[in-house]
Image (cartoon, rainbow, N blue to C red):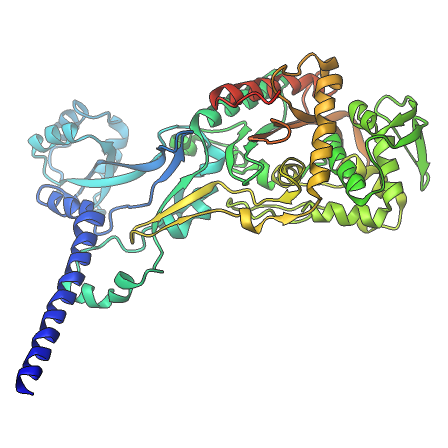
Length: 570
């Protein structure tokens, strides 16, 4: 019995040592690997002053087509110099010595150095170690060197409206726009001081150490592909400049998964010099915040609803009279011309307003409204960007037939570009409403990670067969109708549609000379890798989207096909 008891005690002691060693190993990993940079900072205190909470923040990464992460937002490390005016003796010697090493404005230096009621005035920042070595040799009384970190964006303006930036909110540096704001809880570092009592840290954080569900701070990896992002930004900037538009934007999305490959708006700004911007609206993202009447790119949604409900098919005929009057209002085709007996394919080919209003009458206005809501045109998409707006479809609660007729061709109802892209993706992906998103992975400092996917949550809104049929019809639009079929690709199927919408006046009615142009398309038509959406608001000197956006869209499609080496499908 005694021998057995001794053995149990020995086992218990051994188990205790092993368990304690395991905990020590985990904590050493945390401190040496995860918090290693903080100990470097501690070592730096030997020759510079260091704030007790030097700025720290998680990184944001792009991801190239081969899956390699590339820095989108990171930290730069350097030094700043401050002076204590009360201890400064010879200002002329100090200024001459410092200005020979770093750029200093004479008037500003003397203004700060003469603030004798203060003990701290920062005079220079973001300095290199080489500069600091030279400054130290000057041995200027009252001068302090401080190590610092700051947020930096290697791509300058690349994805500026998506990334956002870090700025002051009161006395705190926080994410102000874009991903920086949306993922503040992940990117922010709530406690940068690792130098606490070691054993107290072990036991106070024991649960966090062994709890496999512990997630908090980390870094984010996006689905944004930097080469595609830069290409799209170049295109929207060219459109913006050529037509002197109010705003121009574009989205490249994988319609099967909802991953955003590129998202761009013009005008844009430099993330590393955002304080120079005078118009703060440039920081907002019109692709998730702006509301627009989208016009004729809504017609494929109306046609899909008609086909899905069984009200029409591609060969259904109606008599096009050029115009009709509903509730004392007259609506007409874009050219006010009658077409006579035409089928539904020609409705899309020629973008006939009367054709899609016929579809609504055939299916019933209540059912049409149900489909538009099912496409998510009056709700937020859930995209991981702040301040998302949602569409306005109050007109589809009206008893008047005219509201449903105009909504069938994208007037009288408004939506965000990202809502529009999500709805149009359902035409491409077999009828499912995916969740558009930009971050695809979060790596936590705990060593855990979260791969983000919403595919299993996608809601079926139209039948797979409807998606295939509308894709076939939109492919015919490109092959035969768009620019007379001259822009179709011989080895690739492309499904696409243009949209030209009148812009509403603030007090009611529509401008006669202001337009919103839009264009969407996906390819290959029956197994799409990408959906591309473009729009430009109030382009000058041109009437139709086919004139402004066809070439940029086709250029983008060809670029993506070549860059990703997409196999021909015909």
